[in-house]
Length: 257
Image (tube, rainbow, N blue to C red):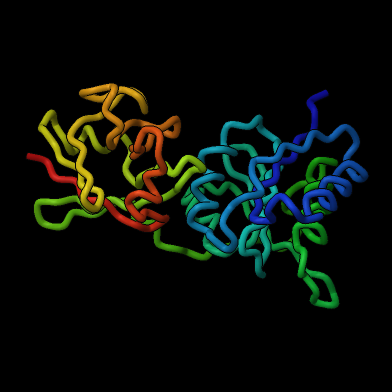
């Protein structure tokens, strides 16, 4: 029998008791459940970063996995199926950012009668996950949720002879993941030389790794391809985010010659 699996993606931090409460409830309600921590260190209320993490960290799990996402949670709360997996979260723009038109089915989770939902992941998400893993069809968890809240996600845009590319994620090393994939970059590039400007820093080649550029011993800006397939900017040995003042939704400029 396949092991029931639940993942947790949250902005709870590492010091609180929230993860312990949720894990304890899952272990009590779902026999043999495997709980996987994606991260609890997302920036509080940052839906854009959370959507990046869910899109790239959660989609590779086996079919039937239940993903609990508690970031900037507020009603309405939804449970949905996409790519054969289940996602339970708030309809705060995150589901539309992650799945687009890939949602196969979605329902609204009824809130408590007293209207208290200060810890929705514990009070609502966990029971819904237990029911799904126990064989309850998604449609039985609540009424159909027909329209997801739309939140604009700008990856890049053309401005004259430049492309403005937005930062979608900053990792713990200070590397910046851009809103343009390597495939999109090559389609636009068509073999031409390019110049990418990050404030006063400039890069003009794609490096095969963080360490290798035109001069591997030169600790300078690197443009490479992350494991997600997105373009990634790094500065070997230092935090590019701190060095260049980058954060999520900052932008860099790309010019083809």
